[in-house]
Image (cartoon, rainbow, N blue to C red; front, top):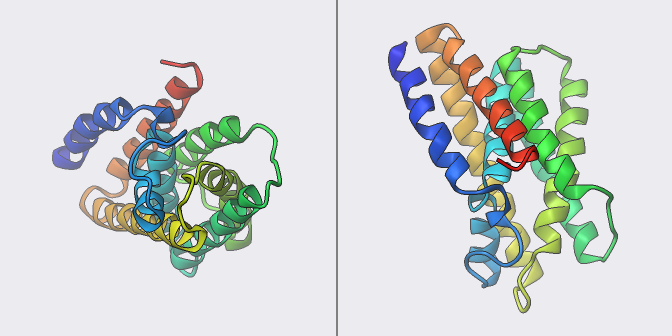
Length: 195
């Protein structure tokens, strides 16, 4: 039980060091697929929210294990398409940071909801994450390859969250997952206040 908590304690500051805004405004590779693939990994806000989706899906169990991450990716692509079509959304960055706090809090609280409610929660946040990805597509990047890249990276992060949630849940009766959720929520609060 000490090992997962120790790993979380070591990983949380490293994830925060990535910086919330590094996934934005042209950081990283500028070619289509690789730029899309890198984008979710370059900012702690996207990275933590996407891991939290996987962790929460693991806690929800049943069909939600695959439906919640799938819904996030589907709506993420929709949000990216809206941005590429120059359809604006209000408070995109604020909603992305709110997703880190809320999703981390849901994991920390081991919040059990119906699959339909889980889909609505993650879908709402995914729209804003996708919009940010789409709005920050590098000039000259192929849209389809860029979208495929960030969709694949997102699915991989959800899968990692699911695997961590499943393994940590079995090893520590879910305590490590709750700690991880709390650390994600706390990181989101710190990002919101600009620390």
